[in-house]
Amino acid sequence: MRFGIWMLVLALLSACGGAEVQETPEVPPASFRQALLFLQQGFRQHGVEGTYTVWFAPAGEDRQELLLEDPEGRFWQESFTCTWDEERDWYTFSNLFEPVLTQEGDRWAREADGETAAFQAAAVWQTELTADRDLDVPLRFDVPPGPSVYDRQWGGGKEAPPRMLYRLWLYQDPRLQFTAEVEYPQYAEYLADFPDPEKVNARIREAFFSFRPEGEMQGAMLRNGVVARADERLLSLRIYAYNELRAAAHPSDWYIGLTLDLETGEALTLRDILGPDRTVGALLDSGAFRCEQVWGEGADREGLEALQMEEARTRIDPDSTENFYLTEDSLGLISSVGRYFFYMEAPLAALGLGEWAA
Image (cartoon, rainbow, N blue to C red; front, side, top):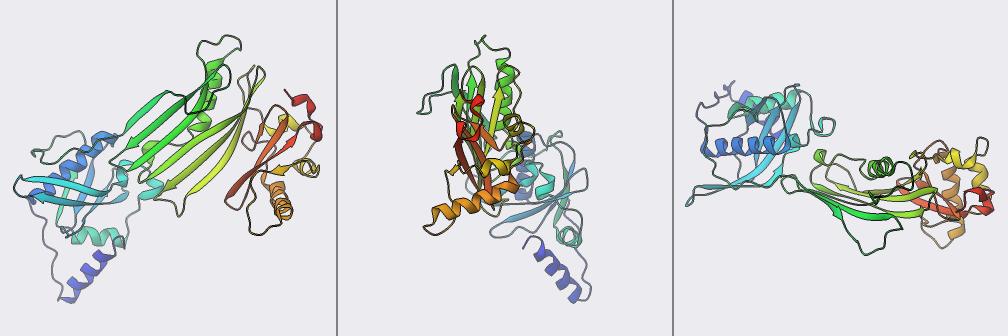
């Protein structure tokens, strides 16, 4: 319902002969002051800068609703459950919804409108908050952990190609209820037999880490991949990505390719493989490709493959670095049917591209 309840509050006030909205109290309830301290602790954990105005809705039985205005005039809806242990005088905050900590304004922030105005009018306390100014409030709650990062070499149950190793990167933010796991290959640091291994390693990391974990909440991301080819000339990867996020209507997954020239450290495009004149359509007309995944119902695999390849004609950009990969003897193409990704392979020799074979 977002802020719909506050529109109802204003309507009821108007129906009661123009009743005035009460002034916000100078001394708020103890739970509000603990909640403000809790919010500030989140600001400090996640590096939120600037002064925010905070409006507190009347405390509900299940949720405490808040409205925050940032220094740019954008509004953020926050909410959580707050319970109090009277014997210990101790507070517990749970069921957290704190998008302001992500700073993803395009996804969660909103401009001033009638609903934000209604929330402000119905609020029972208004104050300001910044991470830089200490609050004169004793802390009476358990501090939830902030984000943590784990990044180290690991075996992963599979053997890395010669001269390479696998690394595992884990990101966990219990407060924002978000995790990310990335398994990615790297060349050994001691290598001296090709010009710039660090440049190559940086380009690999860039392909696997095409997201900002600090901007996510309430969900999970996964990235891993297959080293399709690794020799003295080329490195080629097929990378798998999976997202499951509250902000999205459904989980999503996809593939991307990355092929690096180890002499220059630069990513190749499909055009570099095909040459200046050959088209994607001409490749697919060869009849040499076979789809590794077929999306659709029915037993006619050949017909479904044909439909997928027909759609791939318009989806595969020959000037992209991400929609193909190489093996020792094959070319792989990556495409999709709607939101469902697939990849297909064909022997390089059958495509007249034998010079790219290992």
